[in-house]
Image (cartoon, rainbow, N blue to C red; front, top):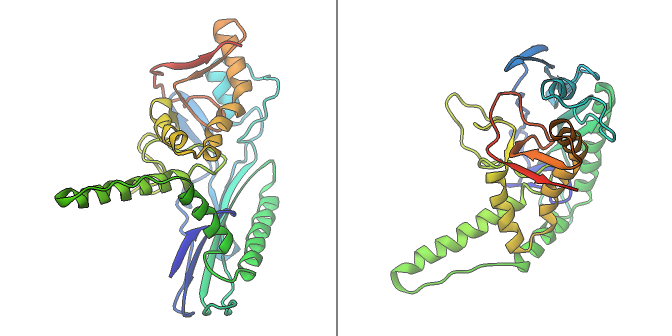
Amino acid sequence: MVAYVDAHNDSVVVSVSPPSDQVVARLVALHTGRPSGEATETCAKIARSADVVASAGNLVYHHNLQHWPDTYMARSFKILNIPLDIPGFVDPLANRSTGVMLARAHTEAAAGTAAATTFAATVLTTVGATAAEFETAVAGASAAFGDVLRRTEQLPSAAHAAWWAAKWSSHTIEITAAGEAAADAATVTRMYALQRFIELSQARSPFPIKFNGMLYTAHRDPMQVDQNLWGGLNWWQNIRHPYYNMLTSGDTDEMRTLFDSFARTVPVARARTMAYFGFEGIWWPEYTLPHHGTPHLGGVVPLYVIAGAI
């Protein structure tokens, strides 16, 4: 069996050889029972919408139905005393859709390889499209990646393997020791490589690494496979650590997600600074949501701030 996240496409691939009709794949929707309506966060009523299951269960996605000024962002601005008419601001959550489509890919024998039963789960996020437009878009993205797999002579593809080979050849740390310490030295070497893999496999998305265990978190009781204990915010005191490692490792391309996340929220930070302090500048709370630069409305007090006068 081969399983990997493609280095050049937002798709997860699982392939089993030899092919078998006994090998099946399915998506598990986590919030199908959640109704549309309102949720209470602190003293605010926040509109929410249910997840959608379509295409005979092969498509699961979430589509935000609210429109300005009834969106989460507009209500957050009102509660946080941030002006609604921010120059250059576009609501990143209005009509936002995120979903995954599962498709069975090629099963014929590729050149030089055995036939296989292959599935691909393709992820897509759009902003501004209707639900129907999103379904069309994610189906197109899934089909396009299926075409990529049909032209692939091996799994993972040569392009995927080359991307990772370039990373591993660009930088390594190998610790050696003699005698009884040899095993411990090998463990440290292996754990450094694993930590770097964990960082690289998450830092290429449009959003920065999630600080608390990143994507790789243990199940809790009750099991919440899609929710970290500390919620959706990123705390600067913790998120800085994996990015420090990437700087010293030379993985500067992957650091862009951190800088881009703050750059996206400059209009909000600028308006907030003027509203709170009465001068031009950019100020972020110590904890912030990477989509839009505001804290959640749960009443947690920032520990310290990131500020810059311009």
